[in-house]
Amino acid sequence: MRLWLAYPLLVAMVLLAAAGHRTVAQGTAAMHKRGEALLTKNCASCHAVGTTGDSPRADAPTFRTLSKKYPIETLAESLAEGLFTGHPDMPEFVFEAPDVGAILAYLESIQER
Image 1: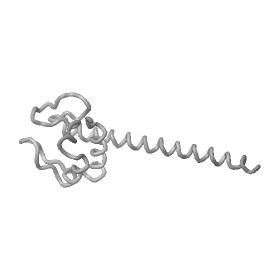
Image 2: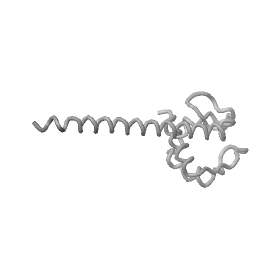
Image 3: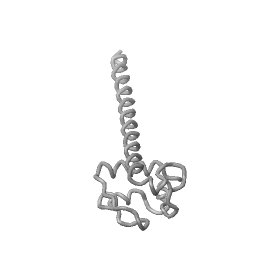
């Protein structure tokens, strides 16, 4: 007889879990969008930063293939402390921690497998 009392609680828990999942997905999408925007602004003049296309500079790697050379997560320190290497006229970039997270999340999402 008490089982019918638990049913509304169960429904509420399922709805809360679904809402939480949607919030996480929205947060991930926003993070990817921010990472893409940062890379487009700072890097797209030389690198292909999306899932298709060639890099404008032949000697600049496409970002969707970076994981073939480097584990993406190992780029965090370089992004935070400054990228000093790359093609000969590559400017130095230093990103703040939230931006590094967004960039890494975006890069991970576009890697060719």
